[in-house]
Image 1 (cartoon, rainbow, N blue to C red):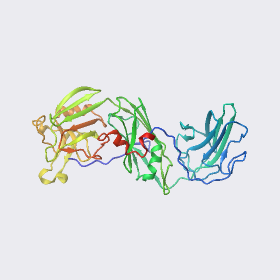
Image 2: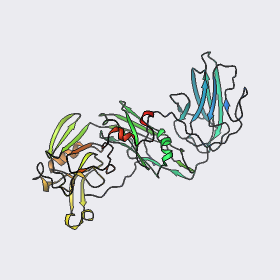
Image 3: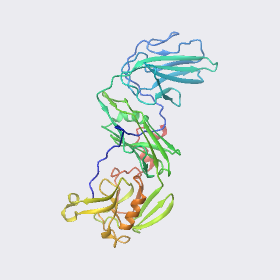
Image 4: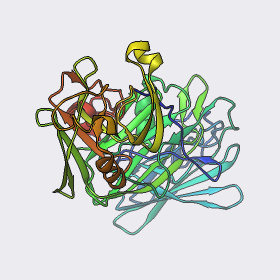
Length: 411
């Protein structure tokens, strides 16, 4: 049994990488703004930004950020209302004339910059609404982004660009400190996952500092995954903000799946749906049973040392060199080569909870697997405890979706 290994984020060019998220980036986070005199006409009240062409059929009004607003969060979106418009466009420029790229929401009521705005910088937003008469109305709002705050929380991703992982791999995003319950939905709305081919999935809050994404079924082999967090400058409440935006591009490898049956003491290994090998195993003995459930390969070590005296005590504990180790749980369950139990493999359980295989089979399996490959163990005396490893697949998709801050029906 090996003590748990602390999670460490990946860095690229000195910037913490993170991951993006749920589809449907449609909502707008209201900024902490101060209303000032707006550009308005045709009887519009100060504090609004309304179209300056009252004789046109179409109308446009910017609702957030308000004209002349200061201390606007760097994460702000441009929210607006239009009437009788057949086409709507948004332009955002900084004070020095630089155009900011962004995306119009599906409901055409908001526009989100592709990244966080610059701290302490002024911007002018222009919304243009064109009616079926061909005439355009515009609304304009100039605002200033707040100065960089002192209380920020970093966002990071376990996986980095270019990673190739197994079909059970969850997308894992970590936050530098706990995200308040009432802020999680706003955070999640700024997280978008795009896959080729498309697959249904959801984010799930594993803890206040960690959120995962998994599809409804195992990833399809060779899927391309892109996730993006537009979280830089997003308010969390009490003067706290998220620090950065992050993107990750990676790929899912072949569909390698391992299934272990305690009744037969065999592991069946399939690749892209075809059985490629059957391996004799020895699981945990009755006093230290292996866990029944679906686990994921968390890390791989060609050679390591198991030191279990502290955990198991002087009578059961041991210190020994281990080959071809693949971690499955934080509690210390591994797949690994165990030449000392080759005589019992296939017939008797003698391990301390690990999946023992022969040296030959351990080497072969180690060469086949990737981080994120799933293994399901069936028929042992102990059920896998959720949270003891990456247990994202140890629950139904409906149960998993309940851990989201946004109902599945609204995603």
